[in-house]
Amino acid sequence: MGWNDNDHEDDTRMSNREPASRLRHHSIRWFRGIVGVVGRLELSVLVAAALIVGGTWGFLEIADHVSNGTTQTLDERIIKGLRLRENPAVPIGPHWVYRATVDVTALGGETVITLVTLAVAGYIILNRRYGAFVLVLLASSGVGILNSVLKNHFARERPTVVPRLVEETSKSFPSGHAMASAAVYLSLAVLLARLAHRKRDRLYILGTALSLTAVIGMSRIYLAAHYPTDVLAGWSAGIAWAMLCWLAVRVTPGLLERSTHGREDTDAQ
Image (cartoon, rainbow, N blue to C red; front, side, top):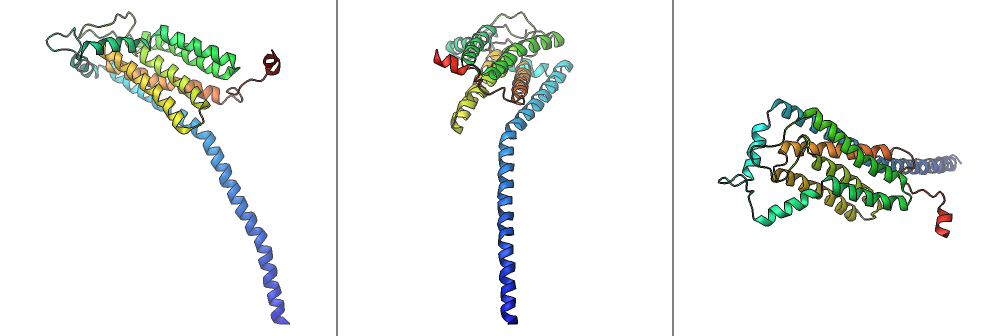
């Protein structure tokens, strides 16, 4: 009898332990799932915050060195290296490189940036993605105002060590083309990447925007419209501004979602 009673007690303890074990197992799985979801949702925010901090820090570091004049010698040496030694008015490379560079640099100018912004904004409004419209508006108009303020504050003159191949009248630091292209094209890339379902598509979109921003900035150096530090500062400030605008829209609940107000009536028409 005693032996059978012990077996019965052991079976009872095991049967009581099984539900607890299953509950603990499911609880752990549930907790891990929640952590994974939260991690995926917040990773983009953390990356944006890191880019804002990094871009701002990079800009301030460059601005400090430029203000102290410690980069002037290196800036001028790089620009001189892009010209023929016997004739500083002529850039290195075949003539088609010069023509292509002039075309590329226009992609970061006010006219092209404005046309691209208006075209994308119109499409966004047609699709009732008003949060995305706010992002594009902030990125494009805000970066222009910010760049003007910074140029007037630092008041750095354009390069004179070699003849400039494009005529510019504004101040040099930071580069408006580099800053605007980084802010606008990266903002548009982020919006397009949200519509892409495959990771490689998203990487392609972001890579294209980064490449376009890079070649626009380098074209400004090649044409002697800016010092290299002007372009680096423009990239830093532009990336920080683009991520700040995106983060402001991202943390506003539902702003990046498509509006369905009046959708049925519009679709019926």
